[in-house]
Length: 198
Image 1 (tube, one colour):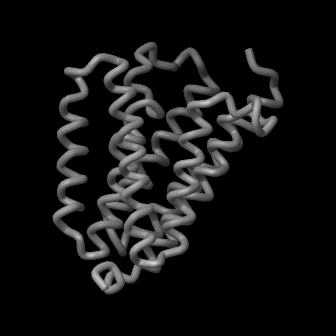
Image 2 (cartoon, rainbow, N blue to C red):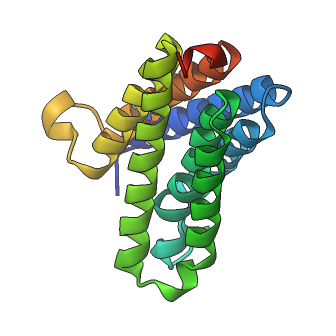
Image 3 (tube, one colour):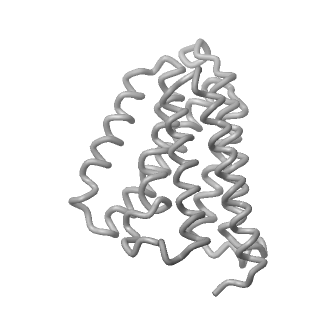
């Protein structure tokens, strides 16, 4: 079992991530409901994960459907990418992203556990790349920063980051993800759709 200090800083990082997600959901609610739903989903997932972390007896034994390994990257991140494409006028790509997300989520019961994890990681990477591409073309520095941060947080969550940064990988990933979520929320509030096609 982890020492109390690690448990406390991990729980605090999860609470901070949850707060940033809920703040971002409230901030983007009037701008785009898809982004708000994506932020809200990530905030709820963070609450559930924190509850499972603090009270392990409530933790589900089916890891393939845990909030981190399936729901958040497969649904939450693509909703953010959908919003970036939609708000910048590329409705066809936005609808394609949303349709693929719905199909992937609906077909999750037909996949093996390894297949679900692979699909979750692929969905997360493609969504982050989508946000990065739109942000580069529109010159949105908040979006570029947010997408790089989300990519870094995803990378830290799958490697042994303790050997690189000397802090628990989950803690570093949570802090980076919280800052990246805030940056993405600011990016959606400062979008410039006319730049995309010039």
